[in-house]
Image 1 (cartoon, rainbow over the protein chains, first blue to last red):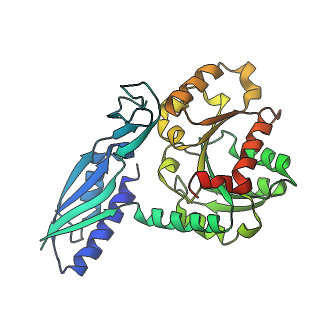
Image 2 (cartoon, one colour):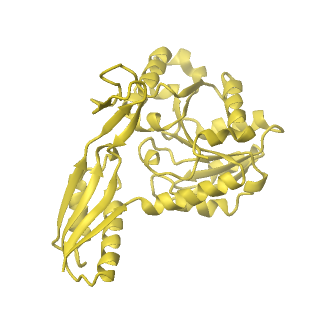
Image 3 (cartoon, rainbow over the protein chains, first blue to last red):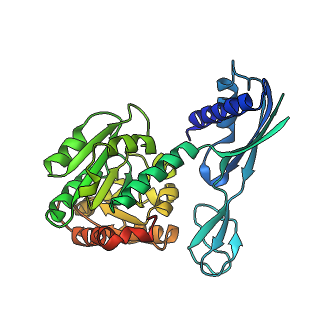
Length: 113
Length: 223
């Protein structure tokens, strides 16, 4: 969802940071994408390939680290990975969980010279 | 050379949403982001809410649509200040758009502000506008599958409104099944079963709004 505008934001962020760090060519970008975001890696990669043309990120490798969804049951404190769309605790059956991991959407680091 | 960034791609929207929220908190305006599919009845719900709360709570509405000012005009005819945002194609409101609209909204005079989002059950769930709560709307004419197909928004919303229940006799909508499914997805969610046309359920909905708006009831959420 909105992969193009997310990648444009990513490129703008890296171009600005590269300027501040005297980097003229980016070789690799590591992006962390939480499972609950619904941002598709294939669409992100496609958008990256197209939008980086003519920028210092052209030809750079985009590595997407997926952050799996991890929930914590608010009834029994069990941490679990949900199956399907229901966030039901496998230990006590409660449908009342908070998110521990899986909502991230950030640029971790990039490499260049 | 490796440069660690650690920056959220949605940071710009999140930042602006935080500023909007600070403005709502400062003016003590309970703010609701109303989200549904196109045609579920958001504007009609707000027209009827405006009529029932007249003289009790001061309402304002920011309306988002791709095009036209029709919804804002309807709300203004219901006697409530409305500011229309046209996204010109974007499928959801952003915090920036709302911030610009707020410049025309007399927040210090309001008890309750609705942000009627663009008709869309997917993208609005991910874009914080600065609201205190999200409310999901689902009409009887849409069938019972929406919560299971779009669990994200039903999980995010503190309340859900089922609209157009006057149409129940003419549809196959299984209300108990829908309520059970919503409860499975979000057992904390308040659900209001309503018809703006007949008035059914509207007193309970307005009662909840009153609790939210008075005595800073919104603070228990994101105040």
